[in-house]
Length: 124
Image 1 (cartoon, rainbow, N blue to C red):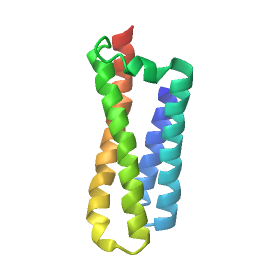
Image 2: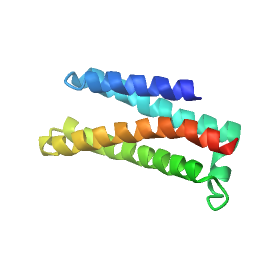
Image 3: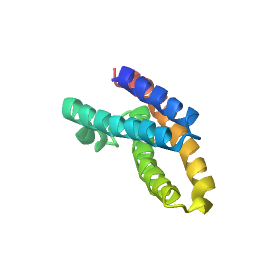
Image 4: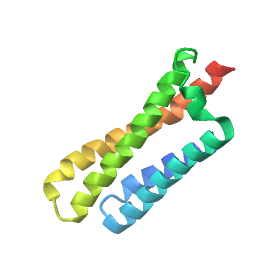
């Protein structure tokens, strides 16, 4: 699953690279976000992740941190879609917020990837 996570990060970096090419940027980032949500569903189906995450008091701290960052990342995807659609409608005043949230989302996704290794290590 970390291999898929790494691929998602590479796709996101490609999308950031093509940020000036609107149609390409939208397609690439959409693929990254959809794949990431599908990865979460895959993790849930294979590991009952939600049940494990709901036991926050008995989980290792690193697992709780990882889950918090991952949930924040998905919430930020919603903000990215919202601000991105506003940009597509011509509301250019939101561009700076979209950019700020975009880099924040990418940073959180990198942290999700990094903490996934630490969360697995803390379980074992």
